[in-house]
Amino acid sequence: MIVRWESDHDYVLVHIHQDMFGDWIFSRAWGQIGTQFGGLKHRLADDHDQAMMWLGDEATIQSSRGLRKVFEVDAESAEGQAAVLQLSLLDNA
Image (cartoon, rainbow, N blue to C red; front, side):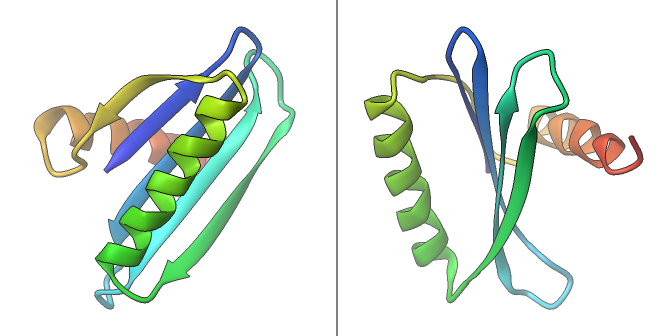
């Protein structure tokens, strides 16, 4: 699953996925739109339910900060796979 929140200047993107060992990874990227400022953090969840709980927490936090959800897609869908490809391109930037 990929979810993105934005304000006029900031963004937060969450990607929940399984790695090749079957572990659930909760990745969170954030920054200022149009700049190089930001960060990336990965967390290992105990299971899918915990990763989804963290996603719910993130949605609450971003809503309270005034960010709005602009994108949500299941990573297994065609649209989600295209989004994951775009994320992988960022690794080489």
